[in-house]
Image (cartoon, rainbow, N blue to C red):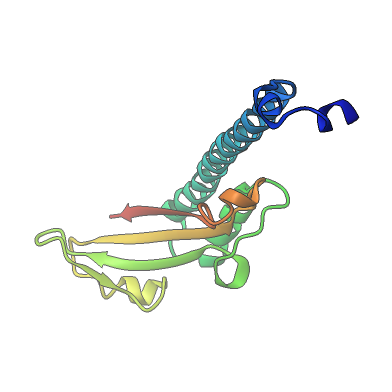
Length: 160
């Protein structure tokens, strides 16, 4: 170590000892960040698919029982992997119903998914049940946490 201190400044600038260690440190940190980012994006996509499948289960339940809102919500919750918590208000999937005018394509929202409200839909129109759920995504790397703050899925089914 002391022999470096006694060298001329020009010879110290030409010294190549430790260059590969510095290069490795820079490249390794960049590669680690890229690998964690790729993992986060893949993990978020996988969780989004699982959330969409859970919401689709609620929509499938709604085909047979469109007025059973708690049953639809339970179908979504039951299809989620263990430990997943929805951030939708109330911690359950939101369910909304509407009438579809098949002649002009307009949609009229209903105040609730009840048989009485369904009877207000015009004859020949379609009843639509929308199931929506959101959940927070926990990122592995804090650099990417703000890119994917939460996941959301919606499924709409039309009942005639």
